[in-house]
Amino acid sequence: MSGVSIGEGRVTFDNVSRFYGEVLGVNRVTLAIPPGITSLVGPNGSGKTTLMNLMTGLVRPTRGEIRVLGIPPDDSEPLGRTVGYSTQFDAFPRGLTGFQVVASFLRLFGYDQTTCGRLAGAAIERLRMTDAADRKVAAYSKGMRQRIKLALAIAHDPQVLVLDEPLNGLDPLVRAETIALFRELAAQGKHVIVSSHVLHEVDQISDQVILLSNGYVVAEGQIQGVRGEIQEQPMQVLIRTNRSSALASRLFEFDHVVEARLEEGGAAVLIKTRDSGRFYRALNQLALDGIDIEGVMPVDDNVNSVYEYLIGGEGSR
Image (cartoon, rainbow, N blue to C red; front, side, top):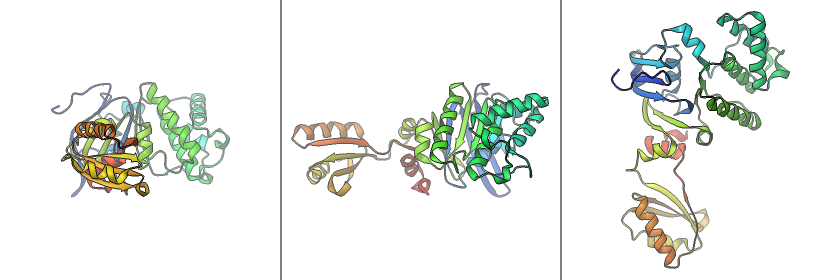
């Protein structure tokens, strides 16, 4: 392979492209995803679901190579034991209870009926669905269906979890419990690969992020590291002070400050600077000169702001 080495402990893409006829799914993707929680971030059509379908073997690449902990997606039996996939779509057999759905799925792995029942019960309990396990899935709310899909994904104890929009439809309490489960699984050394549009939660839960736009990976890494990839873009800082106009006027004296505007009803100044080091040194001097500064807060060390920088605001939709 040319771009990445095939490591048994990672999910790797080497120059992978997938086209649907003339339509681009993803193009020239090269990644080596380590264990932990990795979030795929991007608007609809950016390539998140295609990337997930490729790593789970549901679609084949037009070109390039993929390995999931060393396993090619064409090798369906070991891949199926290694990967758990929760899609964003609901597709359950008609007339079955939540317990029956999970237990029936486990039969695909050759477990006997007793083992299927035990594993299904344990997975359903981890998603706090025991009370609804014997109710038909057709009567479930969206949030309950979401949790049963997650139970299906974890029931066979896979090393790689691929979860497409797993937090959709969950109320705040269940959402927090589900995030805690992701962290628990990641702490066990598993890969937890999620897609999400809830960008502030991506910030909170992710060990690393992969930002996608129009089928391309535009940045990857930790939030701060991704921010470092685009240092040519101005950094934004919010400064709270009781002398906002005076501070804004003084900051405009520095050539590295490209914008300064009043915010929060005049109680703060939002600045953009192309040189964070020089900016902070200048700010220290202004404080020594008598401008009272109540607080300084970087406002773009998060997925949403980084994504807006990279694709011109598309990620906020």
